[in-house]
Length: 275
Image (cartoon, rainbow, N blue to C red; front, side, top):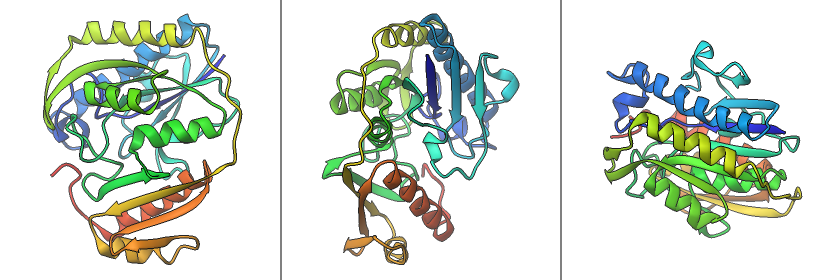
């Protein structure tokens, strides 16, 4: 059984603030250790379920958060950037299931460190007119490749968002949000035991999905009108108002195109992600 893990950081056990998840932050070094331990718990769960091949993609920020020596030796690590497929780099139809570790709620939601890909630069996103963030877009892209999302970990709002998108996905809340930078934390050992057990259980019965090339429409509303106007230089991108652009095409091509949008937006803006 081949398992793919996409590992973000904002939804990791114990982390609640930008200083926990950004290089140079006061508690970043502790945060990256916490991230590795949540991922390792998922790896142990996958091994218990019979996984023989595990790939971990470091999907947060600089994508160099997990120290290779801190990762369970049973897994390979995709580290660094740029990546054409960003948070899903390396994912393909050869995998039997995907796990999302440390994910967070979309922009505008009340969850811990909630945002969609770029701090507050992205105000909202829709996939085929359905509100979407990193969770829904990862799920839809994996499904287009025929890879089911088996389990997701994060705060309670991320878990609710996942359940609203697809109730068949197993979720593990590792903290309970009071506000965007405040949460009640599950004890670390308890959270990681829950992750390990949930992953094992979720992988015991994996649904079979077929690859699909059906087109979808991705719409993104930016904080900056200059981002939207610049993106019009990309073939196939249209604008619905001064700050909102969209494109239509099959996933994962649309996900890959969205990665280009992010790189364009990054070149035009220079604002802290969590202010």
